[in-house]
Image (cartoon, rainbow, N blue to C red; front, side, top):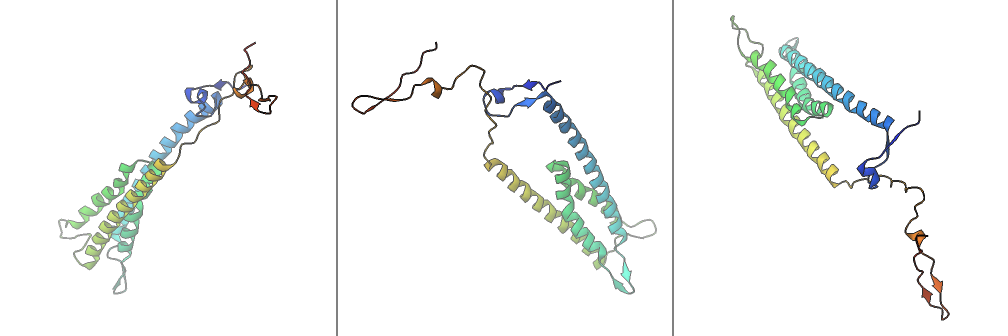
Length: 201
């Protein structure tokens, strides 16, 4: 079955390309699937951020013999810096860039409170304070960097010139305005005389 041409206002005015019924269906299907994929990507990134924050808490007292290994500090700095931009890029929702930092605080915060026996997951020594400081610095740096990139991308989209689509074809039997004029003719004295427009016969 041949594709049916669908004309819209932009196609008739020459500002947009012609679209077929098949392309309309494909565009409609593409606008639904990416939304579901963005939601799934956001859920996965949020779950990974929460799991990584919990892992960081248990890696704070990591030692190699008698030497402390600051793996949790490095993970907190790098992960909290990358997570906001990754979440916004995957979901295309700028407000969701704050979701990984909120999850990090919700998981790390209870670790600073001592339990019934006086045990605490995040100690009050340089390892615990360094971990908290690295996490906060990573969050602030990631949010600022992501906001700067979003503003720069919005500025580039605003400065970009609009792309015009192909001009819609002329109806059968119609002639361009230039074709309705006779070519210029030379008079006897050598001057050029403009041709007259043809009649509609």
